[in-house]
Structure formats: C-alpha cells, structure tokens
Image (cartoon, rainbow, N blue to C red):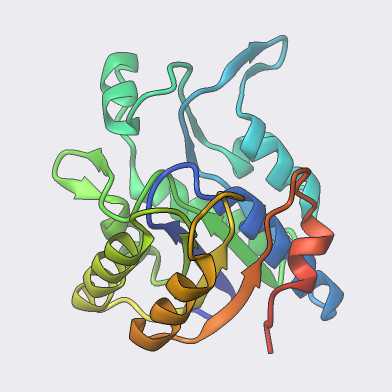
Length: 224
C-alpha cells in the first residue's frame, strides 16, 4: 500500500469527510510534510465563470500547503446533488479511475509528500458500471481513513463499513469519530462501543463544532 497517499471514506454522506480530510492535511503539514488534498469526484457543483466548482473541493484546495489547479483537485464534477454515477450518466461522462490516479500523481509531482484523497458518499457508492468507491480505493492502493459520524445508527454503519473494507483487502490506517449531531443521546456510550468493536486504530475524536475549523480538527487527530 502507498503510504504517501490516504483515502478518506465514511459511513455515509454528510458525516464530515471533507473537514476530517482538511484536518488530516493540516495535521500532516504541521508535522513537516508538504500536503495536497483532492476530491476527485463531486456532485452538487455550482456554475461559476471558471466552470463548475464544488464547495468541498474548494475547501480542500485551500487547506493544503501545495497549490494545485482545480482540475487536479476535482477532475470529475457534476452540477446536480445526486449520486455520482447517475450524475455522470446524465452528463455523458464515464468516471475513469486512471484519471483519478493521474490527479494523485500530479499532486506528488507538484511536491506533495502527503496526499489526502476524499471519496464521495460512502464506501459502496456506485461510480461507473459495476465499480464503486471501494474499487477506486483499491485501484489507487491507498490505505483508508474511515470517518464515523456519531449519530443514531452509527454502530451498524461503522461495523458494516469496516467489515466491507477488510473484506476488500484494503489497508485501514484508522478511523475518526466525528460528532456531527450535538443532540446525539448516549454519545459516550456509543463511542465506547465503537472503540470496543472496531478492529482498527482510533485516530481521534472530533468534537461538535458549530463552526468547523481545520486547525481545531487537526488538533483532535493523532497522526503519529
């Protein structure tokens, strides 16, 4: 597995993959590494004078220490906020894994010593044909960071996702617990259950942040 790059996936959509990815990029930069952050596939983009732009991809671009052109950060972008394989089909585009690998290579060529690659949606989200996000991570040969959104249902989602990652034969760097629901009942008890049952290192617990901040998230992560 390639330890220069890392693939960030999640138990679901909307559980903070982007902010955790930004925290990872900031954390590795603080540790002395030149960093890049990519979101190769994004739906829900807005039309701008420069073309389609995705808010999460722009945040990732700004969080990294290595400046990259937007086309490298986000080569596949679609306007409707729908499943990426449907958006790609409607746009007449085939998502090619070689193009994503080329974006990672471009980041390294630009000087990045740590490349954070954020997936789209969850681990088994379809991308092209029968291929899924899981297939993309395996193709890139990147160890996975699993973001677990602490909310009702997280135990089932986290256990199923990690089981699927292990079954796919992809290395797991670790998991991050992200407090996405400030009103989550018995949050500590659920976190304790996750610690007990997830067969992977816990990289950090990100507290609920009304205004997410990449530097504060980096402080919550243990990248040693």
